[in-house]
Amino acid sequence: MVNTEGQNSMSTSSRWTRNRLKFLLAGPLLEAGNRFMLGRPHQRLAQEVAAERPRRVLELCGGTGYASRLVAELRPNTRIDSIDISPEMLAVGRSQLRRSGVGNVTLHRGDAAILPFPDNTFDVVMSVFGWHELPTDTRREAVKESVRVLRPGGAIIAIDHDAPPKLGRAYRAYIGLIERAHAREVLGSGLADLFVDHRLVVTNHHPASSWSVPFQIVRAELRDPRMN
Ligand SMILES: C[S@@+](CC[C@H](N)C(=O)[O-])C[C@H]1O[C@@H](n2cnc3c(N)ncnc32)[C@H](O)[C@@H]1O
Image 1 (cartoon, rainbow, N blue to C red):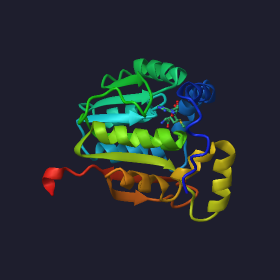
Image 2: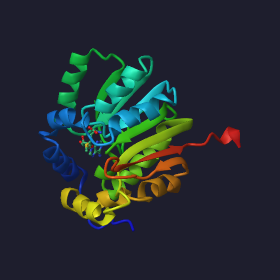
Image 3: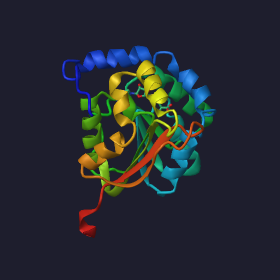
Image 4: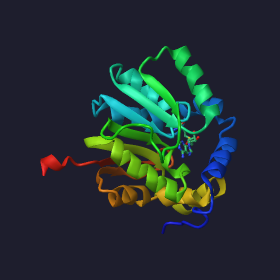
C-alpha cells in the first residue's frame, strides 16, 4: 500500500533541506563504499545499461555519478547526464570526474521530478538506490518525467532496495529504521507496479535473491507506438 501521509504538506524546499543534511558528508563514503557493496549493484547496473548500446543515458539521483562513470568506461561514445539535488554529492562527483579524465559524463544539479531536458532525448534512464529516496508524490512525478524524456523504445533501468526472500521481515524493519516510510514502497513489486501505472512495460524484474544480492533490478520499456 502506498503511504502518502504527510507528502503533500512537505514543501519542496524542506525536502531539499532534509536531503541536503542527509547527504552532506555522504559523497566520499559512498564513493569508497560503492565498490565493495554486496552483489556489486553499480557494476551490475552499468553492465545492464551498456548492453542496451544507448547513445544517450540519464542517471537520476546519481549522487557523485559513480554509476555514470562506470557506464562511461564501458561506453566511451555514449553521452551520459547525471542529475542530483545535493550540491555536496555533486562537488565530490566533479572532483572524481576531473581525476578520472572521463569526458562523456555531465553532472547537473536538479530535482528528478522536474527534469531540465527536452522530450524524447534519452535511450535509458537509470538509477541505483535512487527511487526509494523520493517521497511518494515526487517519485510519481519523476516517473512521468522519465517517460517524457525517454525516446519511444527506450527503457528505465533501476536497481534499488528489496527484501531478500529469507529474513524479509528483518530487512523491512532495517529499512524502516534507516530510511523514511516512503522508502518501503519500492520493495517487492512496488517499483515495478509504479512503472506499469505509467504506461511502461516491465520486461525484466529480478527481485533480491539472497543477502549477498540484497537488491532488485527492474527494466521497464516505453513501447514505441509505431511498433503496434
Ligand atoms: C542513496 S543516494 C544514491 C546515490 C548514487 N545513486 C549512488 O548509488 O552512489 C540517493 C541520492 O538521491 C539524491 N536525491 C534525493 N532526492 C532527489 C531528488 N528529488 N532529485 C534528485 N536527486 C535526489 C540524493 O541527493 C542522493 O545523492
